[in-house]
Image 1 (cartoon, rainbow, N blue to C red):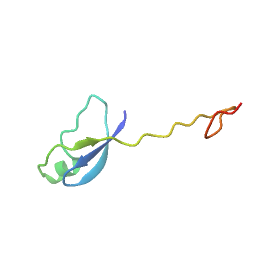
Image 2 (cartoon, one colour):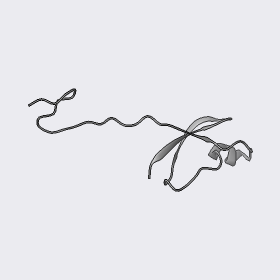
Image 3 (cartoon, rainbow, N blue to C red):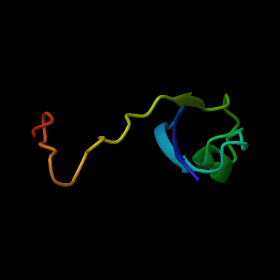
Length: 64
């Protein structure tokens, strides 16, 4: 299951861990405090780095 980054209009950015088929309806902090707010907006999170390891691969380019 992936981790998603959301933004609440009241509490700012937060991360949620859930399956792709689930949809977050409200901010967990708003829910805990009993506050009604707009649904959080899903943000595009920065991806991880792609690193090739093993013999023949250098960090910046392919070397023979």
